[in-house]
Image (cartoon, rainbow, N blue to C red; front, side, top):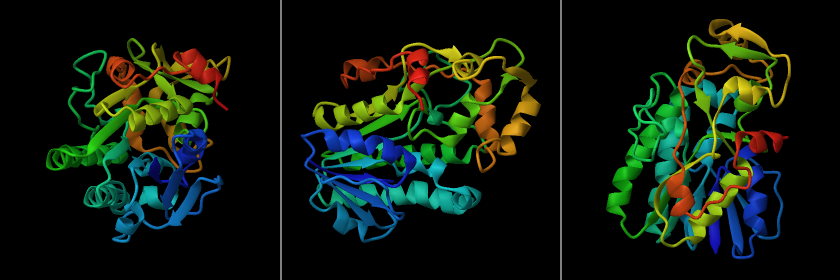
Length: 310
């Protein structure tokens, strides 16, 4: 199989590309990004190109499948992109639309889009959250808003391109190599966030298990549609933090929020509504991924996921 991977210079791609390259069923990988990648492999070729360019058509020609990581990678794209709302929207939404349109025009029959659990409307009316749960980002959560807009567009794209097998993966909090620096900083903070009422529960998924899900999506010819990805159990944020640090200092949400916004070990400030999402319980139903996709995560609990992080 010949595949194209967008966002191939992102930290997430650096974590996923070794797994894809090691699979003997994949004979060629083309990486598409406007930045140089540090990944090297005999089956891998980097193409320096903005995915909004009309030249993407030439790159996707002859590909059997596309793995779209660029929207997931946008969180790590740097302060200059995160500060420019119009640029982030154009890159995340319109850039992806260009890739998918070009792929359909060139006869690519398998598209794997790495989305996020952040697309689900909160607070969740059903628990656990299935793939049919309504989409709707928290107002002001720019990255999630763009993910929702892209998925709305993909709904139309899918009806207009019935011959294309489109798989959407919605992972929960990614941990391990390639995870967002925001998530890493939050989990390793020396303080916990004290919320009013019962602490909400969360899940996570290891990047290696995301790679396994991508491989299943590529080679399971009968698999299409949306798949939630998360470990089997759930935990509160404080319980997750305790796997990395003991003696956490409990801080009220406003103070903890302020510290994280100031960029504690982040290098850039956390988006306000990203922190607001922590007030909500987000537990995914992963039955469909396990049954239909045949996904069996190696790290299938919060504990094993966090123990396997760098």
